[in-house]
Image: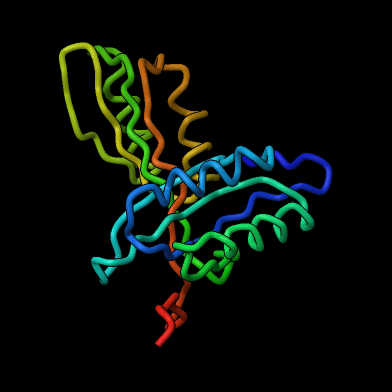
Length: 173
């Protein structure tokens, strides 16, 4: 579930950076110095080996969001910052959830997985590991349905995404 506080909104940014040592540390430091919390952070390579893409999900009002964008652009290794706006982008999260499962509960868990198009990726005598990919709202709804089966542990990747259509974050020519 997405919880908005006052006029704060969840925003997701795609940031192209030079693939240099310490870039992630400098970006995290920028947020820490300003007292801004990062809700989710994913990092990975792009089609160009010299460039990485960092997806950052944050909460904040318009003033805070504008400040974050300006501060990111001041960092030497940041090439481009684009907000992945709802409706104009595809944003998804990958989650693995380990739940207790026995002969009595396994069928119910499988049924819930089928409803949410989640996958069972590991089966053990007393547990299942479930995989779900989707928008945060779908993942949160899945959690609500799985909670009664006793979640042992889980890991969430945080949101990552791309702009829809032909829109793309490209390196300056």
